[in-house]
Image (cartoon, rainbow, N blue to C red; front, side, top):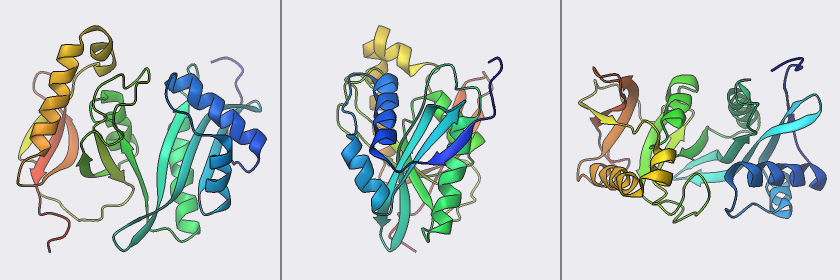
Length: 237
């Protein structure tokens, strides 16, 4: 990256800006269902937050968040975030998430929550190592079959992560759950193997005893793994 100015994070307000957000979304996910600019405006005007990341006045990243409620908690739900190829080494993702947390606290939200694909190892590293997020739950096939270039026609399993530790669980890990080295390549080139990974995660978290992710570590063989422990369900004290 030569002669690049420091990136700038801005709150977006106009339909013109939201159209640029939509273009980034289409460029990153491709062939999926995009978010109309009109809906982004509704989010922005009614308690949500639309952010753009700019380099030399060019929007190269975005993050979309909306008001949400979980039980008695009002929080800011980060629906999507994307950075254009070529700009992903600038730390824009971290800057966008930090601004979401800062903005949420300023406007009275308790925390920021979002989902991420647990089978994407780069997602795991970014969320658990860089953002220090807390995985609250596993949602099987949360969005249904999405059909875009990243998710393909596989179940859209997701972790729900939050910016604050809402449960205060500090038990030592009881085991490790491996993460595939490159699930995107498997989905494209070896779909049967990719499906086995999806099925493995669905079975693992279908355990009658709730399993909670408490960290990210490397196994003795060098494979990235989630560290997990058993935890009480959210509705139990």
